[in-house]
Amino acid sequence: MVEVHIPKRGIHGRLEPSRLDEDGLPEDLRELRDLEALEKKAIEHLERSNTELYNFLTEEEDKDFREAIAENLQVLERKHARLEKILEKILELTPNQGPVELMPAPKPAPKPAPAKAAGYAPQALPEGLDL
Image (cartoon, rainbow, N blue to C red; front, top):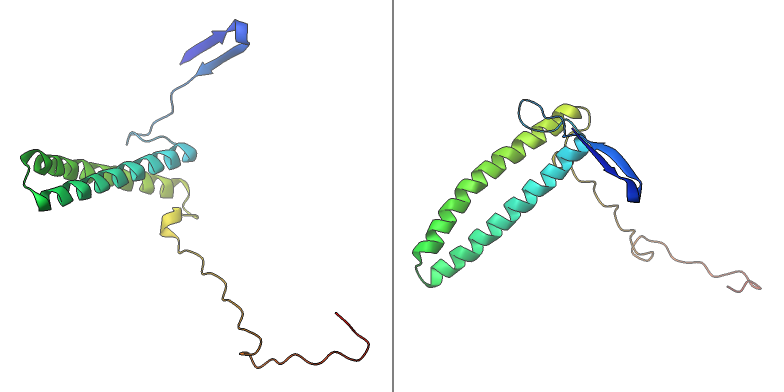
């Protein structure tokens, strides 16, 4: 715990580290969601990097690029394992809800059929009614 006092700005408070479980993950759902987003972003960047490196390798062989791809694959394995632990922890904290990505996406509402195709024909307006 660290106490912070900045009298000129009127700031006083305590900074306490997040409580971590034995798996090294926080107990706070919001923090877990933030970690989930960070891991997904890191995985996305590593996969994109590997794709770009691979595309360069198809044009010309490069030892450094090949080593970078191999290293990225090892990091990706660790990132996927950590993401899986994070998702399990989220599921543990919200057993009735489950992670959003595991829930089926809602189906969009069907578009209404055009009036003529549905067998509907507008009737003529009675005399004296103008719209």
